[in-house]
Length: 236
Image (cartoon, rainbow, N blue to C red; front, side, top):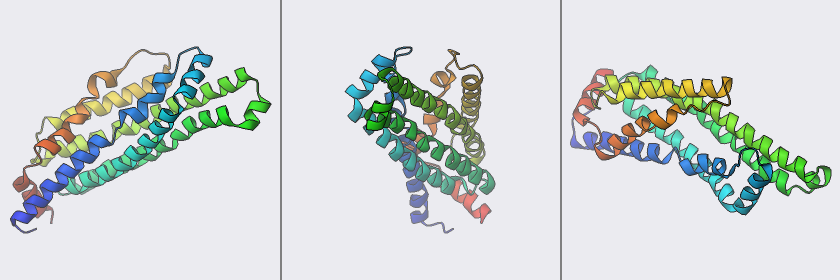
């Protein structure tokens, strides 16, 4: 790695690309919109909400799929950034993200399944209206449980990321432990949701914001390019 100004600009560019892609990735609209239409214990009202907002439901599905693809590229940009710190931990970070992302994407099939049931001529002939509505709720319940499973990996990849930030020397060390704490918050929340589905705990509401610190810092401040370069020279 040369000491040229171009090399320093290159790593700063990678950092900002990673920040932008990371911020785009979560896409709250894609993940939360359908949940906002569900009326607990009222299948008729839920189905009415979905049919009344079907175009937005489909848009939320497309938005989530696009955001998850973006997240893959964000993890690859982060890999380039953190590889000089610890190649194995950087690879583990990407691997955990690449496991969670397809789970999240495939889970959208449950939303599409709910729409298919509502519009399928065979379903409407074979089942009573109450049975059709019950199937819609079943697909939505499956989606909620699918997100719980994906949430495990949303948390797991934060641990190696936090370790890499802490050890990097070119990013604020404090962000590292905060990301590790967020990892355990996700894992605890997922475990509670699987074991105690009626719990009212929402740890992500209190700790989820921590995950935004890293991409914001990368986007606004970038990295200490000279410290990154020292790491890269030692890695080479």
